[in-house]
Length: 302
Image 1 (tube, rainbow, N blue to C red):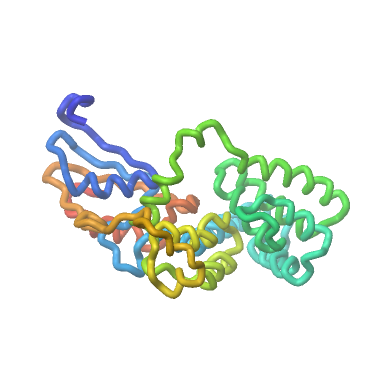
Image 2: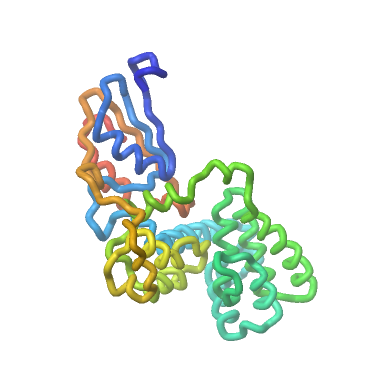
């Protein structure tokens, strides 16, 4: 930074998971920094354990953001006229329950074609994952209402439309050129070292968190075995997998003095926080911003 700035009035901006690195940066302030901007916050500095933003709790966060989206769609007249007295949220819940009871019905079998992490999942799981993929994209999420409507009605014309739609939906998970520049090893090293519950919840609890949501992309509830392999953690939750018995150090590091530490900002240095309500990767649950604001010691924060 000292080489590539003018040495004064420098503002540092972070987005999404970059806020985790910003948390550390703020604990080692540089004199030329005039302010920090945290957009889509993925950390809660100084938060107690039950309010810390653990990625292992993704299933709950995603479900809450999904419900927020469904509630907003209830206010849209063009949505209400199609769903009548039964809301979009309740209709989706009915479809989930129907697919759980009748996994071999026409549209249940059709939704099973949605790509999931492990493949071959039951229709009710694929249904959640499909809607989760749509919610992640600010443009594609507008199709959720029509998707639910046609799955619920499931007439012959709906089947034709849904078949084509699911092909397009699956394309959202196809690799893109930018993926080549991302390091999965580095990502999981940081996630499992700093953003995962320890001890990890057992697999039954992780699955329950996912299944309690109506919309979720299912990215984390099956990662327990991988966490146990990386961490070599000794717990009953990891014992069920038996993957940490190799003769080498785990791919993980210990918390240091800066982990989840309250940041003390120098005088005349500002902090600006942004957090939306429809980003499942950086959930804005009630009280999060209050926690972050409280944990930053500065008079110039907003």
